[in-house]
Length: 533
Image (cartoon, rainbow, N blue to C red; front, side, top):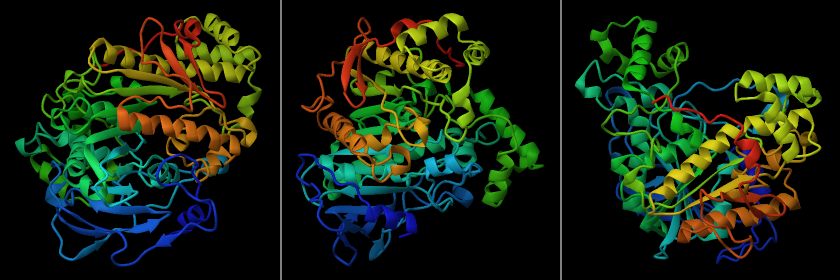
């Protein structure tokens, strides 16, 4: 274990839930790493993990084969079976990607990025389970954020140990291909690359197939699988709900601050243009497209970072026949209930830029005018009325988070219009107090509460009693949803299913309440995003 993980072990959060596996809170967490202590057979061979706080953890378990060389840009293959017992103590590699530059001390502290390895043999899952038995626990499968360009599952707030412990559930997280190796559309150059534009999301389905085929051995129920994701991960959840190959592998879904991805899909001609620009950057003619499978991966990733255009799924009529939730919710997953929501401040906060706290009202109105949401003066006045006493930067932040809020409500409305399964809508409003309160209810804030990792991610939450108490309520909502398809439990007020006439919304804060269409008057002043498909 590296220093970060060792520190996490030493300060492991102590759940206080009512599940069958609770921490006692006494002494240091127990760690057992030895032959036979945590071993299970998969379809491809036996794996050995470790036990900590009575949770069996397996990291870097292959669900697909190596994607390098001739397998680059190709659909995922099955793992190569192995003999003996495969050690599964450490994370598998993340997908090759450009690592964002960390040049601000406060932002780096707040983000707490882990050390990680990257490589093309990245089709791995991580599993946390309370027992290797026949308990048929609900399975919660996490799809990490970072858009379709970057990200890894081994962030401290994604750690599944506490969630598995508190909820008596099996937690799975997925590594999959991203950016140029996951979404380069080469279909026009050769029929063998017919699926290349979407292999990154085909990986997700392959991981879910692995879960279906193997999770019973880890104490999970393959008939009760919830997929969850935030930001880009929320977009991945939506995409998965639209893919015919995922039919029957998903039974519930949680879309967190990612519903705006409904507008982020690519037309085949757009992704084909990106591929053509990459060939030019690498001085390759179309007749030499196969050379892309031989170029060193670092060179390929570097070249891909120099071309214009974003990475993401292409509506190709094959693996992804239609955009998710546009213009309606996907019929193929109509019977899957969803949770969908966003955070109060989302992308706009001043961590690393304290000078923004001194923004004047004139400056805030000017920035809202540039955002072209509508009448900036009316929008400013409406949000100030909804949140009286807010300083200008707060008003600006609240307004800037609203397009994502609009998208979340649109997804909920289109889901319930099918009349087959409910949607539950939330607004996460709890604000971090450290760094002088500058984080606010930031983008990604709810994850530490959902995973019950507010102590592990103390740089984001302050690891306070206040945060821990709310985490118990939030975590139990998602566990209840995974178990029954309904997030209600005795620790929160009744959370009604979404109704477009009243817009019932669970507001997560120190005091959790349900309100009908909170801040609706101000929200409706902002123009909704329109689709590019």
